[in-house]
Image (cartoon, rainbow, N blue to C red):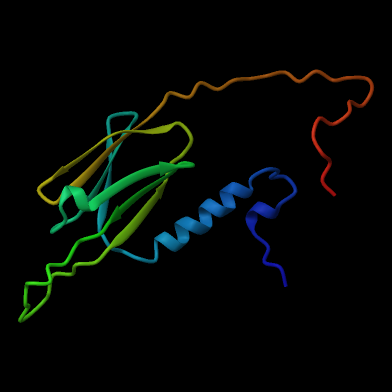
Length: 146
């Protein structure tokens, strides 16, 4: 049986990528490590802060692809250290945030075990476009899907 989703409505044409984004976000929310805050900074700014105690700057990578901001961390263990008790987790992580269209990453700062990502939203001025109505049906430009 096929699973129906909100995006399968015939009124939502071309929104397949949103369904993929929703699925990836729901999977990302299952893991709560590392903890993070999201703050509103001014009218058009945001700050994401991740708590990365024990990580060094060179053990963290940040990438942005298709509106997905991905932060990865991987700590190297020291084989010479013998632990009597190990209560501080040393594990890798991947944390993904889906950014709306028009949201840009300004910069990233790492200080005192906190990674700060500063983002801002471009001012989006709405555009109205009138569509001309032809008297005869035009030929489609692309391949017709069956």
